[in-house]
Amino acid sequence: MSLLPPDPLIPADESDVPAAAMTAPRPRASVAVLVLATLAVGYTLWAAQDLLLPVLLAMFFALVANPIVRLLKRLWVPRALGAVLVVVGGLATAAALGSQLVVPATEWVGNVPRELKQLAPKLREWAKPMQEANQAAENIARAAGGEPAKRVQVVRTEVDDPYRMLMTTPPMLASMAAVVLLTLFFLFYGENLQRRAIALLPGHQQKKVTVEVMRSIELELSRYVLTISVINVLVGLVFAGFLYALQLPLPEALLWGTVVALLNFAPYVGALIGMGLMLVVGFVSFEDPWLSVLPALFYVGLNTLEGQIVTPIVLGRRMALSPLVLILALLLFGWLWGIIGLLLAVPLLVCVKLALARVEGMDGWARLLE
Image (cartoon, rainbow, N blue to C red; front, side, top):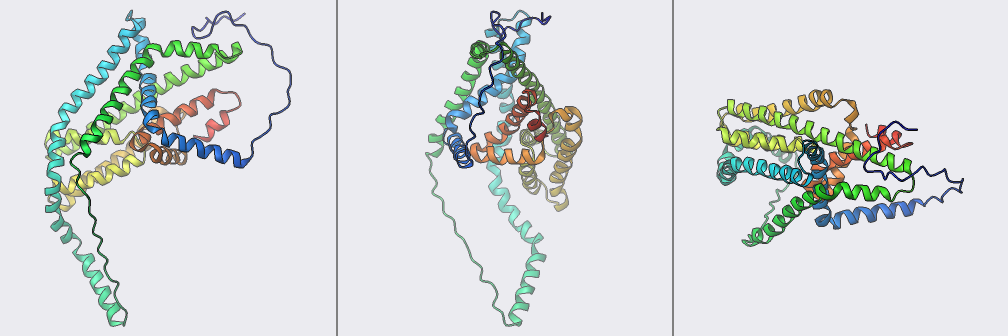
């Protein structure tokens, strides 16, 4: 007799199903069929991204918020009210942060074209030694009888469509509203949906294993996302404090600290984007050439310290992912779904690893991802 209390997701009237008789092994599919099936799945994920991305984002947010809702339920807060409080609290936090950053972001975007025009003479001055070396090489080639390479000038034209923003804003708002509503519905009815889906499984042992896998993924993914979020917020605050120490205005420093924190959710790719962006910020904000590259150098050092020392120590090896597998996942999901794919790549990979680690016979594949 088992001493463990019954799980609410497993029906109490189910009993263990005896082992089935030995059957003939299933025929294996050919390599061509597997390749075609993989291509079909990839094309479906790309073609249906307008439908899949809101659902995946809502499932992700609900998975992260579900332990908080369950904790509120233990404190005698009804599940529906707890879900509303969590979602409204998240939206209020995002709105408060956005209201503080929208003014410096708008000013910076409006001033960037003028600042970049002023930056062009400075860059030409810094690039003068390279131009002189290039001119010397052309003189040597001309003296040797060769013809210097002809410069090709590419002129790009773009039609400015004033209605483009009006056409793209309503679908974006509709997608955001769909994510919020789907998150609420997943928090409202997700537990009942899990219970009914698990009831369809044939055996009690399969139900028990499925519940354990789902619970472990929910708890560990929530812990992982919370830990990564705290680390990224601290990284953003440190970087904002560094920019403020360089005499940048506080709202602008907070803006770039927030950008750094958001980019840190996409490993490697976010660091590359952030380094290029900090170079532009340094060149636009400072006159001294050495002071201009200082934000990018500090960002690279801070990102290296966080990625190589802080995060591995805090999360441990249990959440470690292979850099090669991580880069491949970022490339795949970034190609499929753009920026949102880059943000979802790591949580999806963590979910796959946690599920494989708890399924019997699949732990080797989980170790392959480490």
